Length: 253
Picture (cartoon, rainbow, N blue to C red):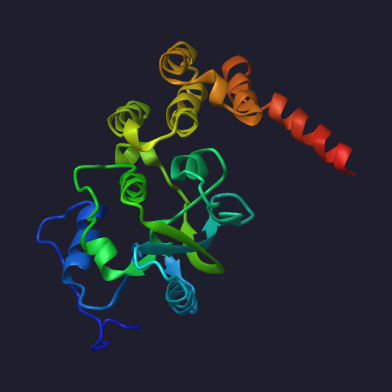
């Protein structure tokens, strides 16, 4: 589509606002039966809307939201495909997203319009607004439908979260404020990935250990999470986990 297409309506803010405000403006101005989101630096593949719509039509529960697989462009040579699988029946969202390699990108989301209009993004957040939105939907018993198609290209090249205000202490405050959305395991895994690992990568071992001891449940963490934690804590890099993965691959051959 081109901006000159009469079906496209363009709205802009007089003052530059964050991504949540832009999404909310689009949601409020929408007039269709469905809403799909797309950030300016990401891409929909040609059949994404059609496949998402087909998945939505097959669902008898009106309170649902569809997501799909994403092709992730990074600074690495090889593209990533995420997620590998959809959320399981009765699996809690925090466990899926933060412990079990789950992923729901904003540009992959597709739902009946009322799902978005009744659940706007939190414009006060400078980071994790997508997580807060999804976790809030789960608390309202919205069903998450996974479509197997590859529908979105997400660009992570030169993605520096700290330049956007995404510091470890911001993530810690966010998690504590929204603790009611998490399982014990999900909360611990979120802190490991967004608070503790970043601290360990910066050699702030004492702070990382303090956050871990005060906030994480060590009995809810899987063996791989423990390996990552011990690697960064004692070596500052991945060592144990590489040996474990190599040994596991050899045993499977």
